[in-house]
Image (tube, rainbow, N blue to C red; front, side):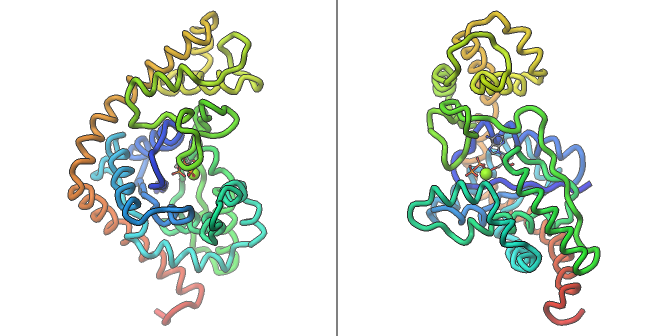
Length: 328
Ligand code: ATP
Ligand code: MG
């Protein structure tokens, strides 16, 4: 079983990334050959600073290692170190419908927010993401709920490629957690917590200090009613229940039973304490790991060498069936 997933070095990673994706990356090491990629090329689709980008790659890699990725048991690498990602993106545009890209929610949302330049990269983002996964012929892709649509498109691209050029690529499956796949912004529980476009007060960062975590949960927006239970008209409380369920490793129903008669204020304090305790060891390990950039670079470079071996083999097949380059 081969598993691939990517995470953007676009800014401070948050509890949504941690619960929706990073926990799944860590457990994927037990289930097969996991490739986890810091996707710096994806970060070029929104405004970025070149000097900061390098630093953010280290930040993101250190968070992943602190969360429990083990370079001995997975392939952790930086996307741009494997140039085949870019090459395959271009080749896949030949089997991607422009109309499908125009329908992507993330493209519509993010391009509407760009004030200066809405880049072609933002439009092609899902093709690059398809290339990321298809390059490794991965069977499974652990992601949060917001990536569902991109995964469907990726599958369509693989199917179209195979029917046009012959069975070459593996059609991957999304792996989306049942609870925690869509952690919402604490200040606006109708929007997902996001690296690039959320309110700082509504976003719990993996590296937040306990006092910041407590403040953010205490101020979390909830409905004016009562009753700690999940309901469509209670997105704020539902979000807090899901968060507590995941960090405690329990079912949301158990949380509802335990806190049935608890007031919102008290419940928020309990969630804050649990999240604080949950993230504290990650923050500690992060501080140690982040301090040694040479070591981080070494890990990423070794990962890229291993990833590249797989990528080069796929690209040779793709070029051959597409009639691109010298015949082999
Ligand atoms: P941006 O909002 O700029 O796209 P992001 O917060 O989505 O940033 P990414 O690096 O794009 O961060 O996503 C990494 C992984 O985290 C993806 O698998 C994505 O589905 C997941 N993820 C992102 N936000 C959430 C969330 N609020 N809840 C659960 N999973 C999430
Ligand atoms: Mg995202």
